[in-house]
Length: 249
Image (cartoon, rainbow, N blue to C red; front, side):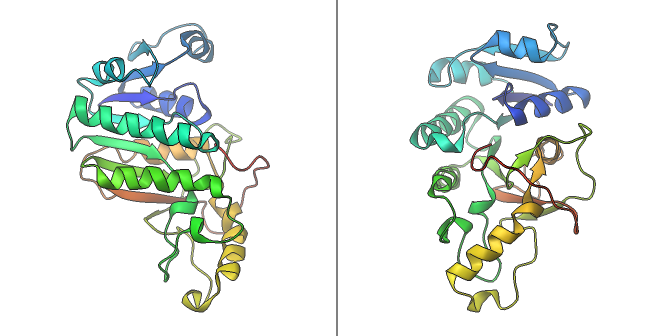
């Protein structure tokens, strides 16, 4: 499959790039800094990797570089950048439709706070104590929903390096809602109690960058089980991770 990857020099993007090439995909990496990516690659360009240097804000260059690909994976930007992040995502969405067609395959990163809480009409971003910076993910979700793209939004909790460089086996993966069981009588709980429950679940939702890359690359086909869905990811039952620097990616 021919993949167009934005954010290939970031923590998640470099894992997506590595695994995609290992699995035999052809990848075009759209980057601002070629030297940074070449340093990550050890100074040599893999056979199935093509580099395009450009700025995402240059819509014409972005659309031209996308032409002919089977799927777009956007790992660029940071939720902490707020409006700049949402503008970037909206540009990528629009240029994907312009270049590849309205129903083209598209992966975007979100966060666990935009997953539905089972048994309620709430998302994590609706709860007190959940940082409002994550509202940017809801803005991006709304933009995807309004588009005709065959999109999926990966919605992990915090992400960390895998100690062995490999994805975790037996991940729990869900569509649109928490990938972990909600607390008992969830529909009767006040928002403050739900916020506490959400916080208690964060270590289960803290996956590795390798896990995120693996889930995306396992679900590249059009009209798959996560077509136009948010994708929640949790560690296998009983496992927990911790990340110190939250929020962000």
